[in-house]
Image 1 (cartoon, helix red, strand yellow):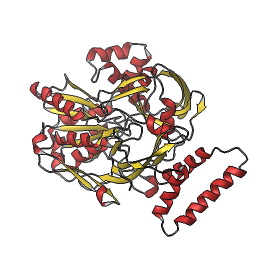
Image 2: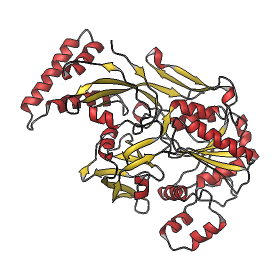
Image 3: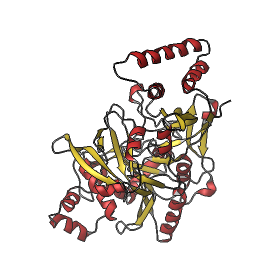
Image 4: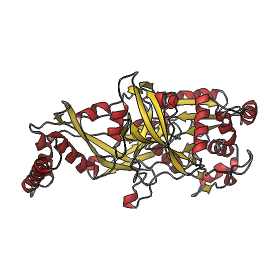
Length: 484
């Protein structure tokens, strides 16, 4: 009997932090599919299997181009899995091996980018470059579309295939042909960059006490690794000793990570015993599970919180934002999140002939919902809204996001007066970008933390506001601030 272990992959499919392996060993490669068909439809299994073999033989014998037998089988398996949803797939041995990532936060021979393929898009998109990683240093930006890899077209590639092409030996170069959106021309323009692959270390938490307003701190969580909750708890305790009175948790560009870590992060700020963080729901009885808090693990249960999110905040980020929003522990500021709220299970299959390594089936087996029952997963084809909607919507233009990333790189979260003057007077391109595009989302979060009135909403059924229009002054009401 094959063994199945359900794995909660609470992130975009390019950063796998846990792989549960099950045995499904079959002698003949074709029987991988044929046995699956017979098991799923026992009454008509033999007919289905014969139909598949007949089609395979006709293609192999009569197609105008020579057909590789193993590739034909692989394509059939991929098609069967991918037609279910965009996160299900059949992984060849080579793809499966290359998708492994150490959950301690270390990748060898990587670029340091999170990628995804959005519904309806023909290109894999850079969701976020990891700060300080090779791609970030080379100039890759959030929102870039990957059109070529080493001169080979990347249009139509699945995320796994793109990941396989991008990774390689540490120290080797890869040439990326990108399409980058230009707001001034309202079009995508080609950009060519060479990135040298390297070891990518993923520190997941950065925190700093801000000079203005006093007593308010900013904590950026870049992804959810094993140590993330402990690191964040340690930083919050340190900030409390320094007079912490309010905290901005920045989840923008965070693609997700370990579900258990996301639950522990929520627990830091909720003091109730047994409060629901999220529920996973699937067809199989074993796929339904409720995750709850433990009162003893709370570090700052009464601390005023604002959580920043954007369209690149996915999966575990959405779990944290949704739970804190539902329990009225935080106001959410930014733009609607990515909408990835599903659980993938893995079955390890026999080695496929070209690679000689175990292949695998990744299948979506459950979806998760917030404590109030909201579905996070966004599926346009099914008419489901999904995603986490901010309490205060503040949009950033592509240029503003680039300016924000530059501030993160320079460790200048809130520019000083001297920095602002330098930005206004300098003729450098970066300084001009920073001067024109303040971080309106962070500024809105700070205004909320310094105004008691905003947190009175947390006791009422609705804590909703919408920011539109041009950038306001630093002291303007949040409703008048925003950027498109």
